[in-house]
Length: 163
Image (cartoon, rainbow, N blue to C red; front, side):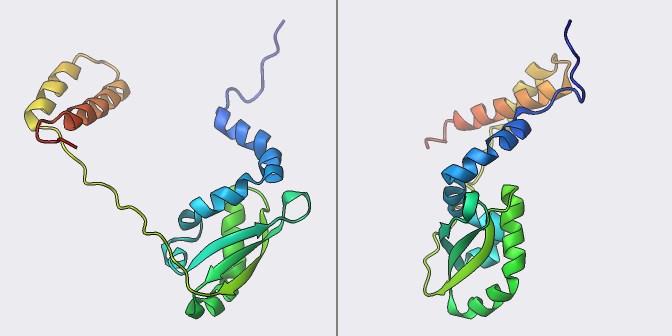
């Protein structure tokens, strides 16, 4: 008959990341995401004063050298922080993507991160009607999800919200 799998069900995201890691390393998907995720990897303070330029991959796609453009005052500090930055990058990606940094001093232009748009709220009377309609839903998680969805729809369709 059928064998029961030990460990039960697992999230497909966890399995797919492990299964595609060799392909991503070989094909260089890391290179594109290090630029887009730089703020999340190194933090706001460092990201304002340094930007990744390119990655020279090491053998087998691992342990490459990341070239980073850095403002003059931060160069010495970043040289001392190199082990921590490399550790952050590698832990972010889950494998040894970078073995070293190569610093290039010079001016940088960091695009401003977009601030979150001001949230538009639905009318309280509409929300009261929504809560009354959702009172019959027994599952609290489903009720919460439907309320959040309903609130976003009501806020978007608000008469004075033309955007």
